[in-house]
Amino acid sequence: MRGHSPALPTPRVRARGAALAAFVALAPLISSAAAAVGPQEITAKLPYDCALPSGPQRVAVRVTATLPDRAKAGEAIRPVGVTTTVELPAAAVADLTALKAVTVVPETRLALDVVQHGAKAAALWRGTSGATPPVAVPAKGPLTLTTTGDVPTVTAGADGDLTLTATTLGVDLALGAADGASTTPASLSLDCTLAKDADGHGLLATVPVGPLTPTPTPSGSPSPPPSASGRPVDPAPSKGSASPKGPGAPKGSTKPGTPGEGVGGSRGKAPKVGDARAGASAARPPAPRCVNENPTSKSLTAYITGYSNVRKLGGASQIPVSCVQIEQGDPQIAFPPDGTIHLLQESEAHLDHQGRKQTPPFKSTFLTFGFTPTTATMILEQAGPMTVASDVLLVFPDNIAETYVRAPLVLRVLDVEVNGTRLDVGPSCRTRTPLSSPEPDPAKYPGPHLVMLGKGQLINGTDATGYVLTSGGPLTGEVTIPAFTGCGTGGEDLDRLLTASISGPGNYIKQIQGQTCAVTVEVPTEGQCTEDRQPYEVPVPER
Image 1 (cartoon, rainbow, N blue to C red):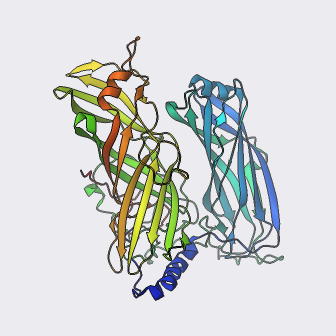
Image 2: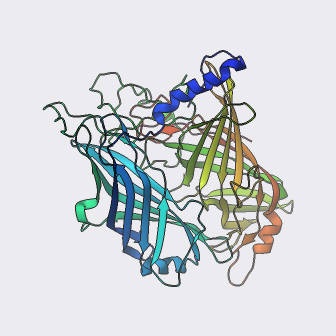
Image 3: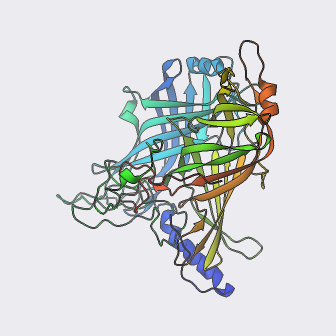
């Protein structure tokens, strides 16, 4: 997003009021509770068929939440206390044991259809295990996993019953080995479909909208579709009509880091009206596929690429263009004791390469011991949640943004050639733990992980400079490469060789993130998204 600060005077006596004004501008994008008569508790027991390494398995899923028993048109309906419990059968536990996993950290992605008067919108209920310890994998099944999390609000644009129906389910498991390190692979993702024999076909809840005696929708005037973004969505414009711009990332926007607009109705091919990029896609450089299959109103996608030094080898490795999926958090305003005013936002993200949380494979060539050419094929594999924490210091008119990106990444070595001769490192060669960086807040972000910092400035009337989440920019950091494990075959232990050649501290890293695509904006601003909702901007690595 090309953000800039609002046109407000600079004296500090006006700063607090100006900051509040900026926060009010974000208010439509922040969920708010709906006025309702009372709560309704829902508990749904749903059978799902999930794809596991050993084949499809029936999995029992229980979803609980609290919803209002009635709401008003135009007011946000907030589900609270959303909990998803997944019971994996014995066969699934055997699959985890075969991968040598002794613990798992679960995340869930429950997709829903939100329907009113035949108009449909999509919502995604995400859940995590929070700060609880990893779940131990039993010697034999079953294994029960529980996740919770805040979910999007829903707003109905007219009176009438609104239904929420569960559809697909994704279960992401971060796997832990006996020594506390990650397994190979470091994660397992299960794609699940609702079983055909599910009672009620996945219906979770019905919320009446309007007065006790609902007002019927006039014939020939369908109500606007419900929105999973927390506000009504206008019907799609007719052919030839002007389409309003969503706030995904227009130039001149005064809302840095805000989510894109939600899209009402069933997702289809984006309309071409007002799309200035329609004839320019041929100029876009080639890039890996980067599509969010289950987006919400806060979903962003972006490409990232750059270099990482390998200090011991006196060279740098280029990390290829990689897809990042981002789910924005709600912005919050903070008034710390020092008298400053901050706009905070913490988002979640993950790498995505062909459905796996990793970069594409990449090759790097170094002179080992200063004279032997060595080529290695590697990937960076995500071993846990990635967070994007943004802090905008509101000092008008030149707001200062700092963003920390934290990601636990394991370096896996797939293939090595030394002076043209293949060195068989085997299928399990990787760093013993994730890469690690100095962490400014270790109490909040424990454990080894990469830390990159982006700094930006949003000056009134101009595009953002430096790094801002939605418009991208440079991210830099310093990383320690841990010791290697699992390298070698046939009794040949290559761990010490790779550790001596590569591992160590002080490796500078610089990544360039491109402009994000606000996935669910009906007609994105020029240069944000391709017609099939992939990021339009493919960044170029910089040293």
